[in-house]
Image (tube, rainbow, N blue to C red):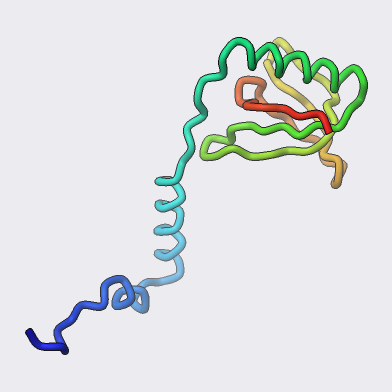
Length: 113
């Protein structure tokens, strides 16, 4: 076979792609790396509830690991309130003082710092 007919694979096509196409391909690859939320057992749910109540009552800083739809994300801050009707947690980021809201069902783990 002739050396000049070798295919260079993706290198050959990247110069023909627009930046918008590259961004779309990266988003598709990220979607392939999606992490499933999983199911929390009852014991872990009780532990998370206890730590949330303790952090709320004692005004402690926490690290919350939650599932954002694609992957697990971490949030550091203090818990302001827990709305049991809407099943939401309201808190304030420690560094920026911005407020955030998280669904209680998306919380995977919590650590008191």
